[in-house]
Image (cartoon, helix red, strand yellow):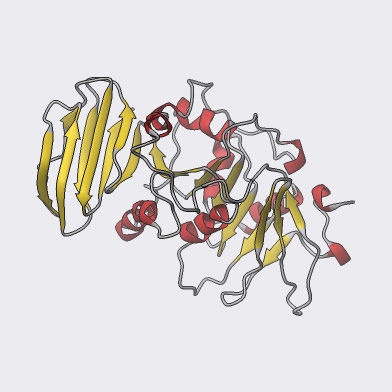
Length: 318
C-alpha cells in the first residue's frame, strides 16, 4: 500500500511521534501536504501525503497580509463563507482520508479545538467545504460528533481515548503526537500546522469548550497569533462569528438587528470607528475592561470597524 492507503513503512503505526525540540516538518505544495516524521529510534519514516490542495505563497494566511482597505469584498465575504446546509448527523464509522472529497473552495483551512460545535448549519457547511481540517487533540472527537473526519490530528492526545486514537490511525489519518509537557497549547500547535500550508483563510472552531477559563481566553487570543496575516483569520462558535480588529478597516456584511460587541484587548484602543451600528463611534478611545461597546446592534447591511491603535475582538451574531 502507498502513503494514501494508511500504511507506514516497516509496519510502524500511522501515529507520528514528534518531539518538543525537533518536530517533523510540514511542507506545502500544490499536490498536498507532506508530513515528514521521525521514528523513536531517530531514523526517518516514510512521508505521508494529505489529500488537499494547499498552495504556498499567494498572500495566504501565513504570508504578508493583503490590504484590507483595498479588498473589502474579501472581508465582506467572511460572514457569508458558508451557505445554509444540512444539520449534523452521527457518523456511521470513519472513512479513509482518501474517501473524503470536499468540494473546491478558496483554499480554506479549518482548525477545530475541543469545544462544542453545536448543530449549526453554517459550521456544518464550512467543514464540508474546507480544503484542510486540522483537529487539536479532543477536536477530533468534536468532529466525529458531526460526521466529519480531520485531515490531521495534532496535540498531546490527553483528551482522546486510546481506542479513538487507534481508530483515527486505522482510517489513515496522520497524527502528530506531542509530549504533554510542552511550551505550546494544542490549539496553537494545530494552528501552526495549518499555517505551514499557507491557506488564504483560516477559521477556528471549538474555542469555547472545557471547564478552564484560562484555556477559553487563550483559545480566543489565537486570533492574534503572530503567524497570521491581517484579515486572514476568524473564528466561529454556534450562532456567532469572532473577528480580530486592528488598524486595517474591517468591512463586513451583516444582518440588521443582530448583536455586535467590540471588546478591547490592549490596555487602550484609540481611533476606534464603528459604522453601520445603532450606536456608532468615530475616533473614540476605549480602555480594556470597559463594557461601553458591548451589546451594540447592527443597523445597516454592512458594518465597518477599525482600531487605529490597539486591538480588539468583534463578536458578531449570525
